[in-house]
Length: 563
Image (tube, rainbow, N blue to C red; front, side, top):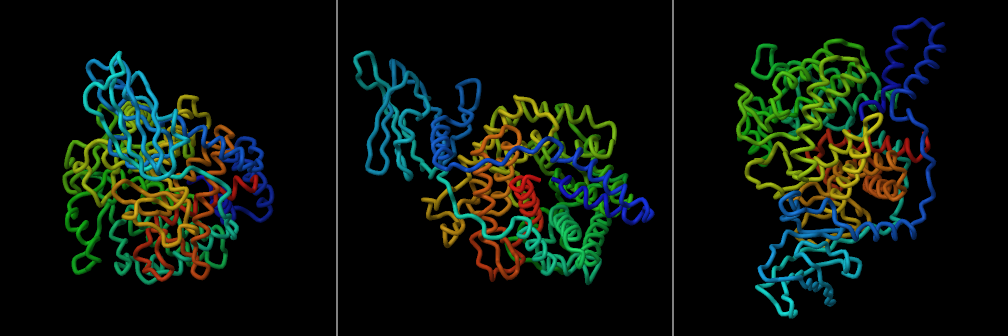
């Protein structure tokens, strides 16, 4: 994503450094170079007409196949804790001694259906499209050679969720315009205005307690605004510099246990935060999430691109070197460590895609050498421990990872990050593309709501007609989230560019249209939690999520405009 605004930033540097007589020639050369070096490097695909009758039929056909189905003893069944499906599931039921086949009985919406299969772990493909959306009761029972029942029935209850059924209500505002309005919302709110007043974060915006994540998101949002709105450029660059310099000030020294890392958690003595944030801070004052310094490094590279100031580049490179130096032999890193000692808090290993993205960016865009072996080891670990297992358990700063069993708290975010990493490569392999398609289907199957949900206990929008479709974040937080919606949309955009699958682009557009539809026409705010009213406090809006949405809006605008 960081390359999307590369041209504007590089040209700003040349605008400052070059003689007037050279600018016209350099501008032309830069335009050519950036088109060759960023996401417009290949010939753009022809934007298709969306034939929704055909697309809906294609979707229903694809929904008959399970996502990354398990194989007893070989491939784990990742869906033991899943509660809803769009794609036909297959469950890890036990073999029954004496059974030669199995009768599947499905009760849903007043309908009763049966089919037989030679295994208790068959997908529900045969009946899936006949099952109405809503609660489902499944029973699987073994039978012997006389067709008599053998052993007790094995059961499972779940929800069959609504399928993709376009067209959905389109956005009534241009995507790029919506992105700029969202950036202006951040700029005009205490999220950013506090940095104009002081060189330290304003803790009235409570989420400033997460510096690596929130200050970095504020920097990137302000850099985007500066590239789009000349009248705001001076203020936006001042905010970005102050936030970046504050991150520099929080970084560990070269001889620290985590050299150059910036912290996950921050709260000066005397500041009081809202209770649920304060609780997280109190539990983690001495800790840090191991991957969070990546967000600082990416923001530092962005502000370096915009200013040419070497101190920002140096911090990004040094953070990446720390990751390289602290990588375990198996290619992994811990999830959470002690800030003062660098010691892991438990045996859990982090999902390393953001570390890979940082190393790849330094290697490809800035020609920094020495990351090849680290990238290779990390990819090997990722395939073995995450992609092959589909154990996309959430790793958020406000939860204890070790509290959850494998597959208990799955999230779309890790799957989407894997897709973004592999499909940003100039030439992803067919194996990588196929895996990314499966991961995108997982994110749709488990976290996307194409229509209003059946789970009345979930945190859902007040007006599903306005806010559907959307994506929720994780099993333990079933709330419609802007960044999750943008993230899954972004995954489908990348699959469209990799494969030309029109259905992927239609899904991406429908999700991005939701974000534009729920934008406050007055302030420009796209709330982090989409069910919020326009009057909500900005403390509820995460600036890193805002930047994720902005980046995705820019991307859908680029694709659909044929740029």
